Image (cartoon, rainbow, N blue to C red):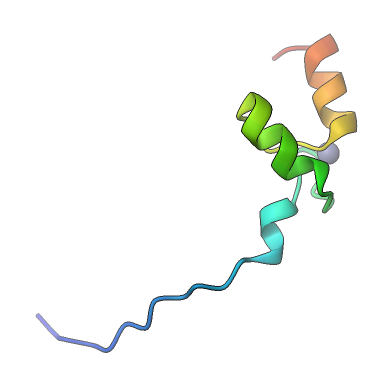
Length: 53
Ligand SMILES: [Zn+2]
């Protein structure tokens, strides 16, 4: 086993706010992730609610 210097990254990725449905970055994504558990923006959450998969 090789021992490497793994620097842990503490960088918050900009992808964090990326909606998994429309791939657009929106601050509502984080909000909805906490509320519903889905990483979606408001408009995608709406369509999910109306048309649940
Ligand atoms: Zn979306």
